[in-house]
Length: 317
Image (tube, rainbow, N blue to C red):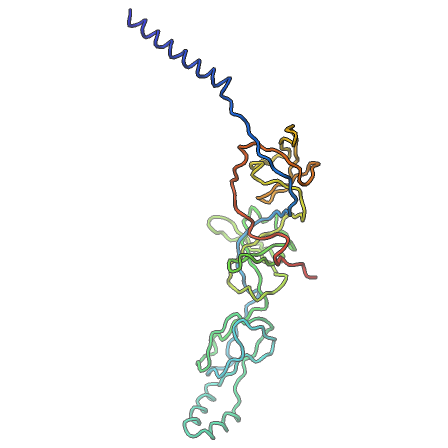
């Protein structure tokens, strides 16, 4: 009987302690809400869809020799721009090469005579463009299927776009291109073609989008990896706050405190992943306060390009 009473007393004490603990938490345990001050700023705002791709020739032309023989001389270097019809190399046919070799072995005078009488075969640029590959050297023997040079009429960007984003990509849409070789340089382009047939890559339907550069630049080379930023919406000047301040909220209305610590409702607009546009009547430099728990940024990365400068380029009419 005494043991039973002892158990009751112990249990009663435990319940009393638990009651005191929860009552204390209820009345005194509430966390104090702290706020962080933010000043409204004016910034450019650029909403983009990002994709990766490559710098490639729009049309690549392989130049083959008209006859089998031996390369005599080369008049251009890889990377040169050449006009259609320009002689870029010369070669001796198999017969001319053999005849000149025999004449050379006899005496120099006879060789010179045959060389002038039996003219070499010119290699002509079939189109106007850039030499992107030189595959021969003087003295090399070639056949009619040997590729001597590769030419490109112009370089384009071919990007791979996920099927979930393809509906937002339109012909004529502007884009900003960066390449790994020049990470701090921007290249302007616009969408020229969107493929109708998808390609399955890693179980995802991908569409090829071709972009034409506003300016053909020497820095870009065929095969470079390109980072493409399709411009969906842009504003050269917008009132913004950092994106971490809204903690990824998607609703249009967002409550903060004004400089007098009174509640103020802000309307949110566009976001570029770093800043969020404020649409409410508010002025540049005005200070607001957001809750401390919202201060941590989920994404501290910076933009890979300056949206309104740095060589983005203008549409050329």
